[in-house]
Amino acid sequence: MNKYSIRNGDYVFSNESGSNIIRSSSEIALLFSIDKDGTAVFHKHGTPESVASYMKLATDRYRQNGFEDMANELQMIVGKLPVDHVNRLIENSSYATKFFQEITTGKILPEGISTYPDVEL
Image (cartoon, rainbow, N blue to C red; front, top):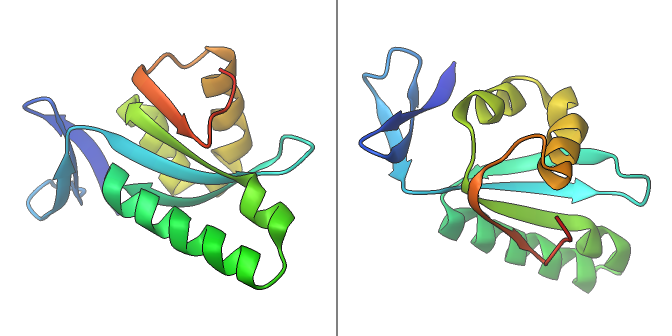
């Protein structure tokens, strides 16, 4: 199983032994859809650039096909997020709602977090 670790201040996504580095970035981005009830579905993780590109593509496709609500539910979080929580999220998709709630209520305190589109934190 692949996971994130911190090396020299960067997020490194690699195989479990760390011998095969897949990508490295100074920050991490996570993409969720959040419905009106606050239920989160985790969609993607990676560099801020790759996740933003995926979010734009998904948002455009949803809108082109008449799914405005689904386009509006997409939320991207970017920042220096705690590695243990990110790895838990990747391993267990049912953790998405709890993770998103803990970020937005301040139980998980990342450094320099940004959300797109803007969400009140």
